Amino acid sequence: MSDTLAGSRPGVFTRLVRLDRVWAACVALVVAVVLVDPPQGGQTLVFLGESWLWTLPFVIGSSLLAAAIAATGIDRPLASVLSRRPVVAVVLAGGLGALSPFCSVSVVPVVAGLLAAGVPLAPVMAFWVGSPLIDPEMFLLTAGIIGLDFAVLRTLTAVLSGLAAGFLTLAMLRLPWVASPLRANLPFDRLGTIYDTCSGSCGGERLVKLAFWRDPARRAPFWSQARAIGLFMAKWLTLAFIVQSLLLAWVPADDAALLLGGGQWWTVPLAALIGVPTYLNGYAAVPVIDGLLKLGMEPGAAIAFLIGGEVTSLPTAMAVFAVVRGKVFALYLALGLGCAMAMGWATQAMLAAS
Image (cartoon, rainbow, N blue to C red; front, side, top):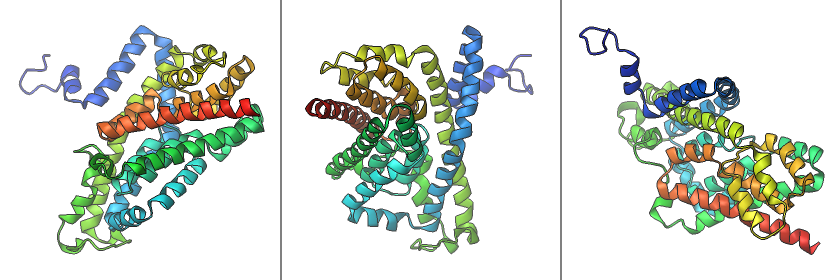
């Protein structure tokens, strides 16, 4: 029966048209892969499920945290304290990034929640760039497979990359788009204002109230905003995971990175650029990098490949683009690729001098 007949239930085409564009792109991409390459379609669905098993707790936690910070009213005091001590905030964020368990995609909802809570962009950028590059478990895995020297080198470059990104962002603090990094009309933008405009028990001055769940005027907006943030991040991360599965299947990282064994100056920037489409998460990258180093890949190129692949990979870039303004997105890409190249060249120079 036609979708246009009065009283009929909406058909498949009508439902797809009404579907959010990002969700529609996810469905269309999966259907296309299943039709063109059925085995890969099955692998993509399995990869999507496994990725969400890992990422879902971070999405739920960051959504609840962002909404709770606004509901309690501590968002403005928190932002004020961090703004008064920006250098300390950047250093702490860079150190915390090295201890956090987030990969490059799962860190995006956490970053969005921090920005929504009013945390300045400089410490967030330090955490953002440094967090996916290393954590204690990744350090032990790298030391066990490749060696302790490379694990220490990877940790050092990760921390330095996060700090460099944070302080370079701090130097641009007076720019208006740095002070307001989130895109307009996102669920995140409403977190503070929704409590500013509520009446009754919210209080005209929006005083800090840690037990916000006891106040119905704060509790209802909290659940509404947490749900909106979670659903927004879910659709973009789903699309990112689908693209990531296809990149892993169709752009073999080991074949691409075999170009990087010559030791010329251009191998480092080439490694950073190759890392963008040939994304590997930090754990999967370790045995690949180990094999490439044994085949002659330069350590500096390996560091640039790891940083470029983790920070500025296509799946991560898609999720970041959905959250922040265009200029902040460009800054993120520039800092990611810049840190990858700088750390790669620094590694090469250090090894040449030793």
